[in-house]
Length: 190
Image 1 (cartoon, helix red, strand yellow):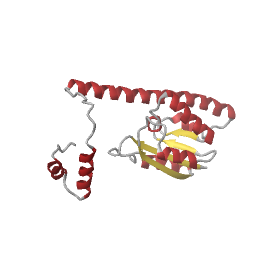
Image 2: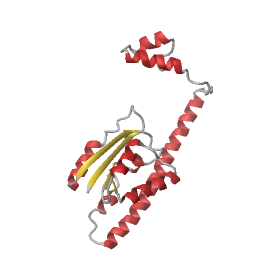
Image 3: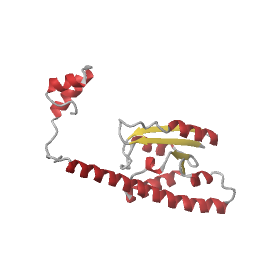
Image 4: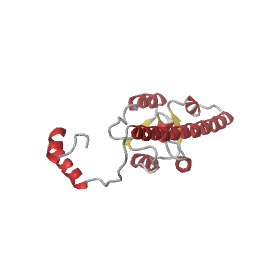
């Protein structure tokens, strides 16, 4: 059996490895070999490179270890059902570090206890995945409202790909943000 640790952050600017040490320690206490999958990718998309790699490399009986349900999913209900089926088809046991009832399944002493814990865990995981998706939707709506209140109006204007290519080119040459902005005639934020 292998413990497959999955950590995720939404953007490249965020630290996907933030919880990795805690998860390594948690896995070490279980005493099994670990494999780590680290990615910066939105949890609102079903197709994620490292998650797909984890699922393809997994074997029946392996453990999928995540810090919390929202690190695994901020998916729509439909897509979460697909992900859960993929996990089930691979024979993975999902352990969520901050959901202690999922830990108890490992040590269930009899079939009845294990079955009851599975039902409880499935319900809790579904609930937490739904809450993670709702939290994400609320956050996006608040950002949109804040931008509107600040007077931001999307123009529908296409991005200037030539300008962006030039910015990347100058960045690769090691120029500072200020030097690039001046050379390309744009703001530092761009």
